[in-house]
Structure formats: C-alpha cells, structure tokens
Image 1 (cartoon, rainbow, N blue to C red):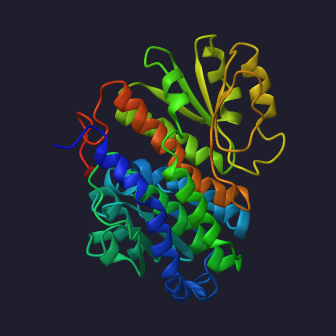
Image 2: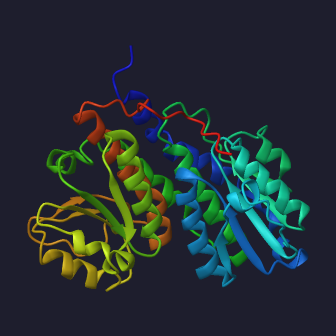
Amino acid sequence: MNHIGEIMASEISETPSIFAKILDNSSIFEGVKNLLHEKKIRSILILARGTSDNAAHFLKYLVETQLGLPCGLTSPSSVTIYRSTLHYDGTLIIAISQSGQSPDLVGFATAAKSAGATLISMTNDELSPLAKLADFHFSLNAGPELAVAATKSYSAQLLISYLLVSTWSGKEFNGRLLISQAEKLAANKDLVSEAVASLSRNREIVVLGRGFAYPNAREAALKIQETVKVSVQGLSTADYLHGPISALSSQTQVLLIAPAHTPAGSMEEAVSKIRMKVGQLMWIGNGGSPTGDDIVVSGSQCDDEIVSTIADAISLQRLAMEFAVRSGFDPDAPEGLSKVTLTN
C-alpha cells in the first residue's frame, strides 16, 4: 500500500529527468523556427485551464518580454457558451493541456482554426484530440501522471514554453545548469521542512509574486487549495496592493515567490506594507529580501530569473505536498477532484 503523498512525491522527483528528456529532443523546435514570419503572425493567444492556465501566464510573460508581440489568454466560453464568430487570421493559438481532452479547449481550438488561426499544442498525450488538431504538437514527455495534483507536467510546460519562445527570439541558455539545479532541489529532503512546520490551515494564506514569479504564485496557491483543502489567494504583488491588502491581518501567512535574479525593487513596496502588519514572511526562492525571522525555502540559482522560475516550481510543489501530508490529507487523490476535468 502506498503511503499518502508517495505518488505525488515520486512524480515531483522525476522533474530533472523530464527536463533532460525535453532538452535532448530540443531539435524538434526547429520546425516552428520561422513560423511567426511565414504565417505573418500579429498576435498570440494562449488556450488553457487550471494548472495549465498558470503555465499560460508564464508563456504570456515570455512572449511579451522576449518577442514584444501582443499576447492574451483565451476565453473558451466565448465559443462554447456564447457561440461567437471568430476572426483569427494572423493569430497563433497555443493550447496547453496535460490531457489534451477538455471539450471546451478542443471546441475553442477547432473554432479558432476554422477562423484562420494557426494552432500549436503542448500536451502529455500525443494521441489526444488537441494534439491531433494542432498544426504543430509538442509532447510534455512527462510520462503517466497519476497524482491528481499536476506537478511534473506543469514544470514541463514551463520549460517547453521557454524553449518555444527562445526558438523565435534566438536566445540560448544553460540547460545543464537547469537540470543540475532541479536535481539539487529534488534531492533535498529537508527543502520545505521548516516552512511546513510553521504553516497552519487555520490562518489565512496568501501567495504573492511579480513578473515571472506571478505564475508560480498562482500555481502554489492552487496546489495548496487542491491538496490541503483551504482557500488560498495567489496574486501579483501589484494587484494585492490594489485592494486585497485591506484584508491583511497580523495572522495572515504571506508566502512570497522570489526566484534568483528577481528584479531589485519589484516587490519592495508590497513587502514594506505587508511588514507593517505581519511579523514573519515566508520566501520561496533565492531572490527577494528576507530579514529577521523570515523563513526561506531554497530555490535554484540559475543564470537568470526566467530559468530560475522553471526550476523553483519543484520547491512550491514540495511545499504543498508536505503541507498536505502533515495536515492529514492525501495529496495523491484529493477528495472531489479527478485527474482529467472535462469542462464544456
């Protein structure tokens, strides 16, 4: 009989080898190297749900910062519920999905292609409807993912998103360093021990990030909600200052996602205001500005903020998984959830 959390823990530990597999097969991206020019792409839209939607936010930041192209997130219900007519000539749709099966994603992708869009998909199933529908498909190479809470597939989505945009921008990076840093995090048995011991299900939890850390903040919040059964906010520090901070109390547990090379001052205003009410903060990653009694969950030390963000997903996944186990919940099979969510 498996111990609770054993499957999720095992899948998180597979992440470095999945990174290696993706990088060993990176030549497949050559097939889309000239796509933006050949198809006269003027804008990019990303199609995703759930965990994959958090990866979509990461890809959105990549497109906007590395390519300077307009990039947005789709609203599948515009097609599946409101039956809108699309006009997508010169538009690239990038669909991100672990299963590639959700009817609303397939329905939107079908309508977008009929409206003139070019479709790229990344899924963990090359035979899935989204994979078959796409003009270009990229496999997550994550293998079977049995734990309901997605982990290794999310990390794979981040890396493939990075490689895809790097193909278009001409940027190169140190893949070996990413793998070694991911291995270091995965092998650290005490990575989140102090943080998990300090967390309580009975006090509000807020997870914040800025820029490339924002998608991981959303993902950390989602993972804790899925596995620990508590309501958690995952926000950008900028948005937090625009209202939600009014609910901050001395009992609020604030987790700050801060990968190595986080831009100086990007979170300074929010941290300063939060410290006025909260004595101890928790940091995930090697960036930021921890002081005093703050708790720090180690992250990676890659060459830049973007790649550090990819590796640091391991730290937030471990935090959620071990927090769930300590709280008496089974993160492998959270009650009320299934692996594949077939939204219409």
